Image (tube, helix red, strand yellow):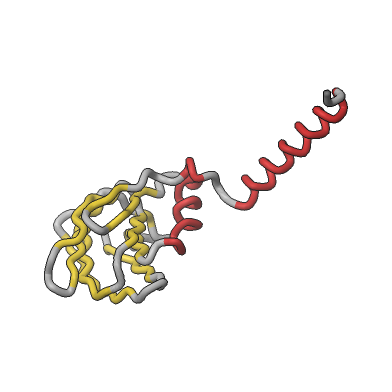
Length: 144
């Protein structure tokens, strides 16, 4: 049977480990839920500092990172409710979704894609090539 000081020491050590792990990065619970459409697993979000920081840390684990901003003075503003369409090289839609926040992270097969992002009737389009074990970050900006 463990003595009371041993149990207390173990509890203190466990608390310290939890604090250290939280200091390294936000817990996975701060990430938005992932979704799947065909071969694409994705998440959208980044509302609020805690969730935005968690999404930014997770971004390198996804081949495609999209960010949506409005050009503004004195600094750019994040946008949500952006409609995203991604088509492959054969013009087949692989993802059609509305972003819940300023970020969309997508795991998708290597290949060439056309990414369209629409906000308030204004569409921006980018050609993106994703290689195996690659990460591409694409920022879409609107003037107003």
